[in-house]
Image 1 (cartoon, rainbow, N blue to C red):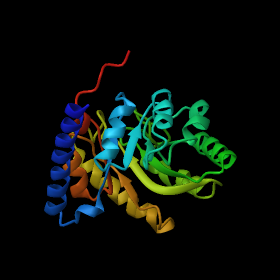
Image 2: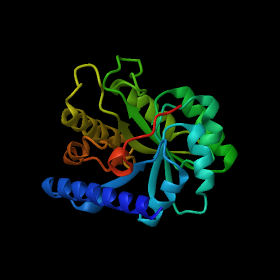
Image 3: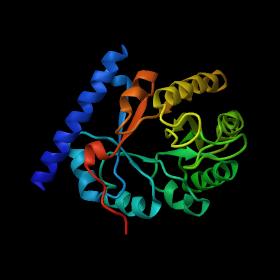
Length: 239
């Protein structure tokens, strides 16, 4: 366990250096960017080590892995983010542990999240996931709503009991006009965030950037970066 803690500490330090350097290059302060460590496929023991190392925000993308892990770490002071495509039949479970769902991309999901948040007596933060590979009215390859659908969905979240509209999230697309253009994707997301905040001033969270492209996200203005492999190493193969 000591070896694993040393490994994670070294990886975390390197990621922190990258974020700090990116902030300095962009004329931003380090405290403007929150690191979310994506712990999917890794055990609860790693989450515990990360907590000991000062990590407060962790993310998961599959409820069947996240729910038992969150339960095993319920004594820790952690902020849990759900970042995967979310089926409505998993919402009740996810609402039980997640503080923020970053992958809100359709009205039916909003309605179900609201119902379960009210039932659980919780306020759940929501990010609209934006897909830059989605056609108008469609969803992206990895989930998300087209930019044209943000306003309507955001208004629905904002007026739904038990939900709090926190901002926007994106995953750089693998296809379409923005493929391979991460900086352009993130700058476009920031423009959309500016538009969103005209009607929803408090929705100022912008979640963008992962292990390979966090510098571009920080340069564009992201408030949160989601880093997995750069902290935890190569992911185990899923069975």
